[in-house]
Amino acid sequence: MSARRPIETRAAPDARSLPDSLPALLRRLYAARGVKTAREIDTGLAGLVPVSEFAGLGVAVERLRHAHRHDERIVIVGDFDADGATSSALLMRGLAALGYRQVSFLVPNRFEFGYGLGPEVVALAAERAPQLLITVDNGISSVAGVAEANRRGIDVIVTDHHLPGAELPEACALVNPNLADEPFPHKHLAGVGVAFYLLAALTRALVDAGAVAPDCARRLPEWLDLVALGTVADVVPLDHNNRILVEQGLRRIRAGRCAPGITALLRTGRRDPAQAISMDLAFAAGPRLNAAGRLTDMSIGIACLLADDEATAMRLAGELEALNLERRELEARMRGEAQAQVERLAARLPGELPAALTLFEPDWHQGVVGLIASRIKELYHRPVIAFAPGEQGLLKGSARSVPGLHVRDALDRVAVLHPGLIERFGGHAMAAGLSLQTDRLEAFAEAFAAQAAAQLDASLLAGRIVTDGELDAQLLDVATAELLRAAGPWGQAFEEPSFHGRFRVLAAREVGTGHLRMQLASSCDRTRVGAIAFSQPLPWPEPGEQVELVYRLQVNDYGGRREAQLLVEHLQSPAA
Image (cartoon, rainbow, N blue to C red; front, side, top):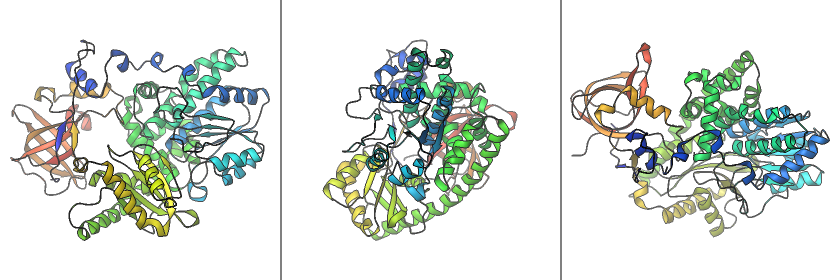
């Protein structure tokens, strides 16, 4: 069983403002996630923040109207992750539907060009003789790249959602909800969400000007499947606006009215598109799409999303699956090496591990270090940065944080206190990227750990698990599992409900390799329920033992039966 970790129940404020028609369980769960009104659980399209509130769209739309009138060549410059891929595919499809005839996309190879619109990427795009570049999911830190485009007489529209730095690029338009002077109230849009708002504003402007048919406005929801996938895969907080975008996209996927590539990605991941939920996008479609950007480049992923027939989409999804299998093998090796590093560090240092961990191996893969940082963070409950060799002798790092440490701001503080230590950085509260010189790794590790220690209370490093409390035994059934499934979409900052409780083990056996299947009795001993714990460490509990579980309630359809099952996230011996 796993080492003991403190388990706490998520605070649930007064839910009396929520409708009485909601089941009591859902009222409690929604209230615990900060929902105060019925409007916040309405995921209809009418609830989206209006396009008119996004002030930065105006200049960008005018520039795109000019491009429409003059039939200009446009190159979309995307990022190499799922958010960048869906953003690129969204604008490719949307601009084509609005009559733009000369639009192409360019996704720089991350290992050759690095992140963002650098001068070298502009030179590559310039070979196509465009009049306009549009960045998606990148560009807000591309000061030099935009300057190079301006020098070449190419206009740039930057659409991004990453936090801006001290200096902004001199683009003809900047579209980013996180700009200091941007009044748009929902700051957590993914890059694909920003692209969708730009497309919506452009469509409205072209329809109002009589440049396209009014029917174009009714086509906008067609691309919400792409918005849903990119939003979930980028792990942005699912505030109300994002939950609307995700739920509306999921409805299209379940109805079979989505891009064939998304259906193919789900089927390749052994998920039923007709039953798709946000977790299927997060753990099936998203990783397969991301595999292309991690190991090669994202062009094949975008091609999959742009495929218009099932056969082509399935062929491309198969290629992405092969890359995903390669990624998993690489990740497994690197994860083992990372754990060994931490164990050596723990043996060398008396007492507690540093408040933040910095890891590096000379043969680590640049495209996988983000996954390693995430896995080690989950194991050791503290911020982690994993580095791999990058271009021009630099180390490329990927950071993952824990609640309580805004990692991008922490890197900014390190850069202020130690000028020249970090070459470049950028990101969000929970994830960031950076580069530094190889000989500065040790100094950086000390500075970053010190910054984390200054900001993080020791209790936050104890691996505390926060759940939605205990679930009454009579609710351990299929009806409750289906109720919870339908109550989403769940995701980052709107966590899927998890519960904890004590159970008696009736039977336990291994399934697959290292997975534990159990039959359990509830604490009152009147309810029997099955459970599955994946990759559960030894020793396993014996029949008759009491266990304390953290779990999610789901429906098990295996073998044609429909029964409730506990998906175990943590298993430990009960406290004495």
